[in-house]
Length: 115
Image (cartoon, rainbow, N blue to C red; front, side, top):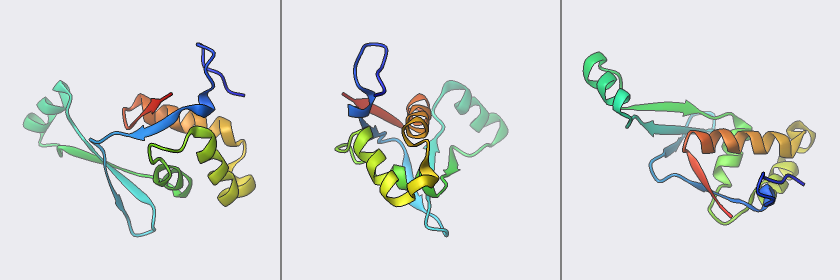
């Protein structure tokens, strides 16, 4: 099983969506994340270069499915089982891909984890 460097099982972690991230369903039924620009450099760019105060990220079908199932209750393993059920072999290697995707979301502060 996937263990973190502290010996805790990553599959037992519960991902939680950031309250700062908005979401909407786009034409193809997938999710679009709307992320506010809040850093110091973002604020300068907004004022000087008239960039939008939010940016949008369109998720693909798999990413949208995972995002929809991040409810603050399901752990990584449970979300993985839902992905396996829906996408079958298209999701393989399942837990490696899921862990990488969730780590990207976490590193960008779109989600956090509760142990």
